[in-house]
Length: 531
Image (cartoon, rainbow, N blue to C red):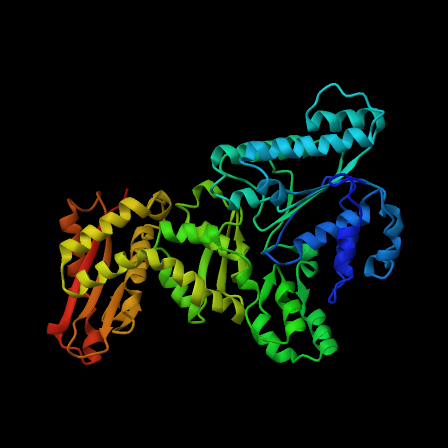
């Protein structure tokens, strides 16, 4: 046995000897069906603390040579499978935890060299009879297969960690790493199975599709592996009976994860901690720094804050996501922002409708435990944007339109991109974006105003209206318009048309009906050039 080649079953034994262990060996029956087929490359995405490493260690213990795992697995579901012993400890397994290699390397290039050096050394020791002509890892594997016909199972844990470490990664290192994995795994005759697991999907990164041979098991499409992705409701109910814990209260706190069509799933980390301590509290949210999410929010402090507030209020938002997250474009792609929340398990997706590469779904906060994270961690990440919020609301309330324009212009230069305002049809894409942007900027005024968006009033729908909670304050109506060069001569004409629309469609009717005088209703328009 080695550390990376056929490391044995010691790590899995630690798991099964733990006070709480839930049998998930049924996944091995599914994986057996992938061996030496066109579907031998699989990537299983799960949120953190959902048993990724335990499952990886189980795969190693079941397939790997150099140990005898029959007694261990004979107690569990896999032993009932007709092919249980057919695959048991019959394969050479290479187990790589990328996080461990990354922490020991100064750069991604150094990490790749470290992996190659360590694994090659163990391979040459195990296959000492083979004659080697090239020193690199892929060449060594090719020579072993060529001369002995030995095949391998690759188990790669935390495969995506470099994408979550911006200090070591950039577009060039992404490519270097993906090329390394591609060269080692793609179309190689020595690969019987490649089982990769991480938080983020694997599919495609910008123009680079090196790992397109992988079958993806994502948050919205776990397919036949869904029941093995976390604890099911039935499994948790049995644990509650065993430990004499109130299932209903526990369900209120920790239920809510959804993997494809599999609902009522639980985070194993939180459940195990609750069973041991008996305290209903947040366990899961304290296990990560949420670094990548924090970086995105800090770069774009005004983006999506209004929708975060809606989620905190227990509301559902309808969003487009793209689970094939393109990391180098996270700065500009709002869909990737929500995709990252979904991949991390902070929100759940229901009523999922897939349209090509995109997915539309209803999103809500996963459960009560996660709601605590939204209240204390996610909102705190917006603190860097407080100056922007304060400046904008002060300028609005004091009717300083030049300052408002300057603030929006500054946001446009520093935070917006083609992905926000440059998309083609529908024609109102930019108007909708600016409405959402301003809603995010003014959400801090909710203790002074009832803020309403896209509500019927008069003969139409205004974009935003602000109803003062105190009679002595001004009310506001806002209308957003995109400059159309085919119909209008200038931005001034666009602005005039917006104000005309407010007047002609009598948008102030609902505010007047609420007892607000005409003289206290401040009507403003926002216009922009559609690039």
